[in-house]
Length: 281
Image 1: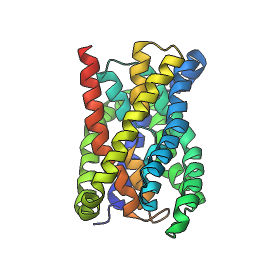
Image 2 (image 1 turned 90 degrees about the vertical axis):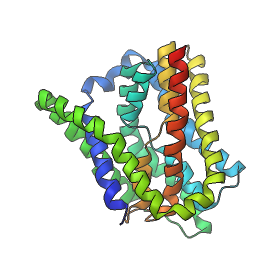
Image 3 (image 1 turned 180 degrees about the horizontal axis):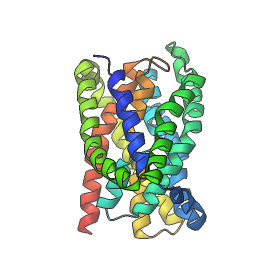
């Protein structure tokens, strides 16, 4: 079974479900409360990829894994981060706004960052990135489904609410199914690389969350805003990273997707622990 025929529909479905949850007003929060939105976008789009590159370089990751490692750091969290923010009693409106803004901005930043990373690390292993094809894939699989979701919500609000309730319950099991299939097909490589990648990814998530705390402190954000910023920076879209790595139009390399699979596991463990701790507080 080729995982690409599983991940592409799942990613499209997740983006459509995200669109169903968005309103045009969600993009206007930056004007009303610029500091928390700016903190979240800085953390997601600049700090996290930079951290991934530095950690990968410091821990001497293989070039093929380094590409996948930075790739997962470039892919912003989807609607799942909104759920985690709600569970952590964070600022859900801020979470939704950050998800909306980062999903659009990273249509540009992911190809640009990955072009540089691939040119730096991929030249040693004959891996190249067709930037134009990556950009078009992101438009088709991410931007268009979000637009369709927003349009459906605006035109048929009651139906959109019902669809959203169903898809929100399906999204997480679909990701688990994808991760399971991918693990079965690549279990030897994942097991062999788990020690090194598991450490690197754990360090990345913890430093990302720590940078969220630091940015929140520097910008004097509230407790609820800080919790959301920590989750948004610490939670990335594994399905998007797997789609880019596995797609015949882009990398067409399952090995590059391995960091995203391990990230999905470690991210949920660490963030569930974080939610449990802050709820007790």
